[in-house]
Length: 221
Image 1 (spheres, rainbow, N blue to C red):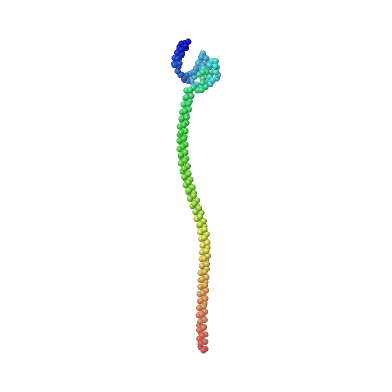
Image 2 (cartoon, rainbow, N blue to C red):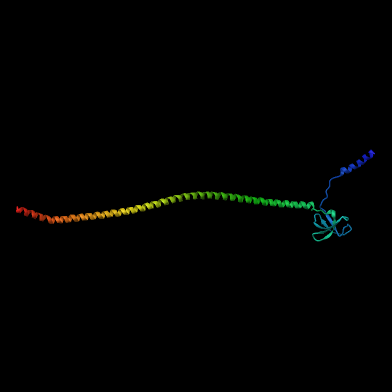
């Protein structure tokens, strides 16, 4: 009995050693027939990855009734239909997505470079405006200081104008007073001269008479 089992195991060893992993390729064509059997006419060959609309499935025959995008209707084996696209088609789609993402990434990098350059320009413009604003502030402070000084000078000027007007009024008053004194002095000198003149005339008239009286009085003695 043990010998039989051993011989049986020996017969199994070659089959185990020879076995290898294998993968069914998705690159093949599926027959679409006019009915659900191999006896029906082949209408066309559907390449792998072709999209079809399943109208119904018959588990007994193993066929599904399908409709293609072009409007052709027929039967294909259900085991050749998948809910997901073929791996080859998925890989092509993924490659296209990767290509689109790379292109999108390049566009974003370019836009980022432009945005960075614009940001740097805006920063420079902001700094320039900030410096200009500081200069304007300093100029405004200087203007305000000059304006304050000008206001003070204007106030002082008004005070000086008022003082000058007062002094002019006083000078005019003193000038009038001096002129009046001069006029009075002239009048006084005129009166004195007139008195002296009249006195001289009177003396000139009286002195001869006095002399005559003295002579007559002396002769009477």
